[in-house]
Length: 279
Ligand SMILES: [Zn+2]
Image (tube, rainbow, N blue to C red; front, side, top):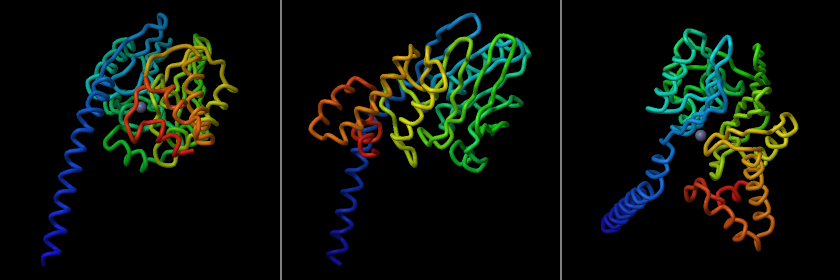
């Protein structure tokens, strides 16, 4: 009986220790990360296109002659603000919502878009979508390859990335006349990626080659972080190349990791070490 009591005691101490460490991790990393993510910033690209940074993933609001296109629906209060802006500029025109992928920071506002056309990647199923997003409104169009929308003023390509990069069905949106690429979380600006499940760093590198072969990269709207020039794209690609080099050449590992110490990261999950482990 003594041994049982001892095991129970040790288990209790371990659980308490994990709870304390978890709380410290939350206060030091998750809470400031969430606070930073909740902030929003609007940038008018031109008369018809607004980029709404933050409040979840970055979003686009594009006014066309026959519709309003919204790219990613955000989460919480920012999702409601975005929806209000979309309905205000739509003035009765139909709203099309594109979800770049099924993570909550990009689809959290979907339930507001009742009756709208919702476009998502065709490698997801209704079941996998429901499992990931809970009660979020289901997409009405699943893009297996690509979908092109042509209006009087703009040609829009919505493309399903044929690699399991961030998720199994990442969409990007390219505005041909404005040369703007919305990448979802395939590209981040000064933020270390979280590489989950079956996604791999090699698939990210394949996706970068695919995108640079397919589109003229001029303005990049990443999933998180500020929009910018093609440098946003090349810097993020360089991060993956550096982490690949760190894996192959351990002598260089510390120097290569140090290049990214100012990028937003979360120890263990969203860190250079976690990326290197996935190569
Ligand atoms: Zn995201």
